[in-house]
Image 1 (spheres, helix red, strand yellow):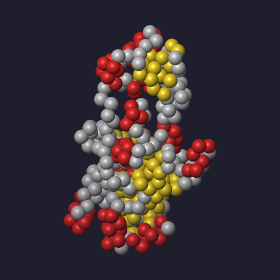
Image 2 (image 1 turned 180 degrees about the vertical axis):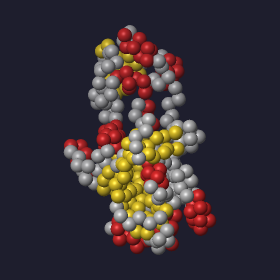
Image 3 (image 1 turned 90 degrees about the vertical axis):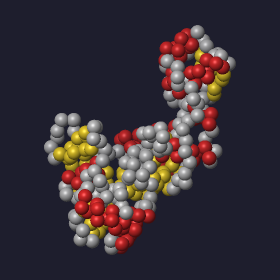
Image 4 (image 1 turned 30 degrees about the horizontal axis):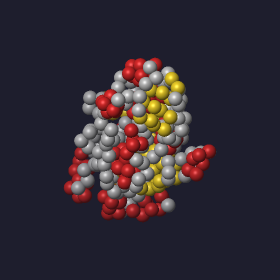
Length: 330
């Protein structure tokens, strides 16, 4: 017999969903059969699977070690270790400055993402134990393109994960980016359009009018300064679609510097030769949280910022845009 006591990161979910994590290789029919036979019980009683778990609930599995091991599968959750640039963290949430070139979320088992780095970080700090990872996995709540740097928000607890996920879903958390674009922009603007994604090429197209399978997009931007060839922009991402900032700005004639997919090849080559720039200069530099109450009141109206990467700052400095950067972001 094995017994598991539900903790705060496991509470608030259906019993059958919890069992699906604990015995991830077992078919659902197995859970229900074992519950009917009382080989799996909740607080010593027969269960149906639709019960909502509470902290302190006792789950008992009257299964042989062989059966449990068979259905539990490989219990080791993927993790990786690197020096994370932590902008802010508390017991529930963490904000990390992701470098360009790193995946936000898992896409390839051979390559770690910020999710695996977060798990490795929490294990190393002993904020979570291996056993807890069987039924709860800390994760990140937003996605940045591989070559976009900047703020990644993560939930260290279930409560933190749910709160941040809700803010991103409801768009009540405001996201701001910095980018260098081709051409001179002197006026603030708020632009709308419709974005269609070609899944085969992983490329999007922006239209002024709605097309079949297109989604509405909204982007606001504010110029911070220019040098006659490039403009440093602060972009407020209203909606958050795939490649939205890159494609939307390109559609109005101001592609991002270094963007191989939506950018200007001649301009990209010039700065690739000058600075060895091989990716778009787009950085998620600021998030502002809305008014929060209750457990997360401490984060109410908080703003978190992440400094731009070294290469981004070098280009700003050497292209005579550093003064605009500091003056307008102060």
